[in-house]
Amino acid sequence: MLDEKVAKLLNTQINKEFYSAYLYLSFSNYFTQQGLDGFANWYSVQAQEERDHALLFMKYMQNNDAVVTLEAVEQPIGKFADYASVLSASLEHERYVTGLINNIYDAAHTVKDYRTVVEIPHGCEDIPDVSFLGGHTMNELIQAENKATAYALAKPGRQNYTIELP
Image 1 (cartoon, helix red, strand yellow):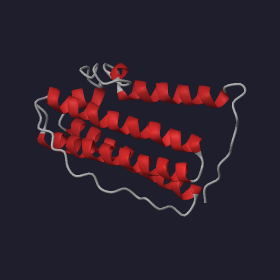
Image 2: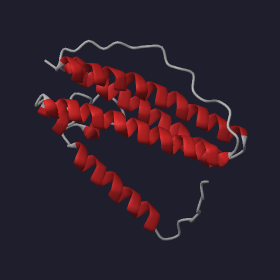
Image 3: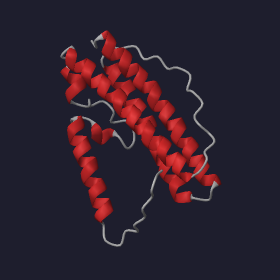
Image 4: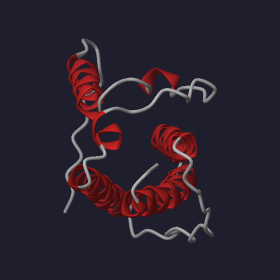
């Protein structure tokens, strides 16, 4: 059974992940309207990833007999001054969500809920594109993401663009 505070934070996270998906769809829509299909596609993919995160948290709570409460999804930002404002909003939102995740880990660690702290659970094999996450620690996944990003940035023939944010 999950600690009440940890379960509440996880439930909040589920709803924030669904909001993140809506927010990234809003970013995708903006870039589509601007004729920047590559950016639009990237944010569309990110929206799906956020949805998948929500489903993973839901499955984790369900596997631990915790009640999941889905709330109304807040309408995301829809108007942007320019490209840089979208990218800045994206970065700010990622930092916010990372803070929420850190709060879950802190709460779980405090009550010695090492399942929540240490390992992403199995049981998500039926969710496309995320089944590989089960059984790995968050640290392993972050390291894999860092390696993949470094590889993608160093890949020969890769177009290199620098975007400067205000």
